Length: 67
Image (cartoon, rainbow, N blue to C red; front, side, top):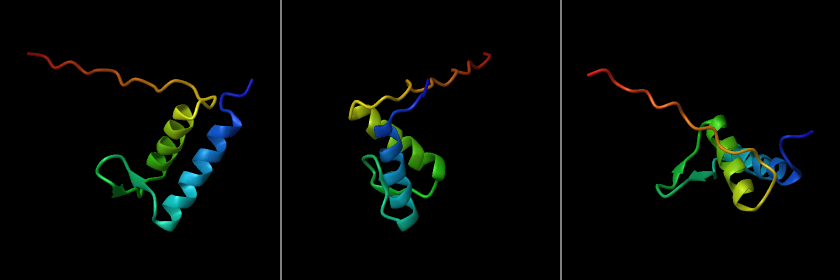
Protein backbone atom coordinates (compact mmCIF):
# COMPACT_ATOMS: atom_id res chain seq x y z
CA UNK A 1 0.00 0.00 0.00
CA UNK A 2 1.40 3.38 -0.99
CA UNK A 3 2.03 5.88 1.78
CA UNK A 4 1.75 8.98 -0.35
CA UNK A 5 -0.89 9.88 -2.91
CA UNK A 6 -0.60 11.53 -6.32
CA UNK A 7 -1.33 14.99 -4.92
CA UNK A 8 1.61 14.71 -2.51
CA UNK A 9 3.93 13.76 -5.34
CA UNK A 10 2.89 16.71 -7.51
CA UNK A 11 3.15 19.25 -4.66
CA UNK A 12 6.62 18.05 -3.68
CA UNK A 13 7.73 18.08 -7.31
CA UNK A 14 6.54 21.68 -7.71
CA UNK A 15 8.29 22.74 -4.49
CA UNK A 16 11.56 21.12 -5.60
CA UNK A 17 11.44 22.90 -8.96
CA UNK A 18 10.80 26.23 -7.25
CA UNK A 19 13.69 25.62 -4.87
CA UNK A 20 16.01 24.90 -7.77
CA UNK A 21 14.96 28.10 -9.53
CA UNK A 22 15.34 30.03 -6.27
CA UNK A 23 11.70 31.14 -6.06
CA UNK A 24 10.52 28.92 -3.17
CA UNK A 25 9.83 30.93 -0.03
CA UNK A 26 8.97 29.74 3.45
CA UNK A 27 6.19 30.72 5.84
CA UNK A 28 5.58 34.16 7.25
CA UNK A 29 9.18 35.33 7.05
CA UNK A 30 9.25 34.73 3.30
CA UNK A 31 12.91 33.72 3.35
CA UNK A 32 14.23 31.82 0.37
CA UNK A 33 14.44 28.06 0.90
CA UNK A 34 17.84 26.54 0.14
CA UNK A 35 17.47 23.18 1.86
CA UNK A 36 16.19 20.14 -0.03
CA UNK A 37 14.55 18.73 3.10
CA UNK A 38 12.74 22.00 3.75
CA UNK A 39 11.40 22.01 0.18
CA UNK A 40 10.02 18.49 0.65
CA UNK A 41 8.43 19.48 3.96
CA UNK A 42 6.72 22.48 2.35
CA UNK A 43 5.39 20.32 -0.49
CA UNK A 44 4.00 17.72 1.92
CA UNK A 45 2.34 20.29 4.15
CA UNK A 46 0.68 21.88 1.11
CA UNK A 47 -0.55 18.43 0.05
CA UNK A 48 -1.98 17.87 3.54
CA UNK A 49 -3.84 21.16 3.39
CA UNK A 50 -5.20 20.25 -0.04
CA UNK A 51 -6.54 16.97 1.35
CA UNK A 52 -4.00 14.63 -0.21
CA UNK A 53 -2.98 11.25 1.13
CA UNK A 54 0.01 12.04 3.32
CA UNK A 55 0.98 10.44 6.66
CA UNK A 56 0.74 12.57 9.81
CA UNK A 57 3.71 14.71 10.79
CA UNK A 58 6.26 13.13 13.09
CA UNK A 59 6.44 14.73 16.49
CA UNK A 60 9.86 15.42 17.93
CA UNK A 61 10.74 13.79 21.20
CA UNK A 62 10.86 16.46 23.86
CA UNK A 63 14.19 16.43 25.60
CA UNK A 64 13.88 17.18 29.27
CA UNK A 65 16.70 18.93 31.05
CA UNK A 66 17.99 17.73 34.38
CA UNK A 67 17.73 20.31 37.11
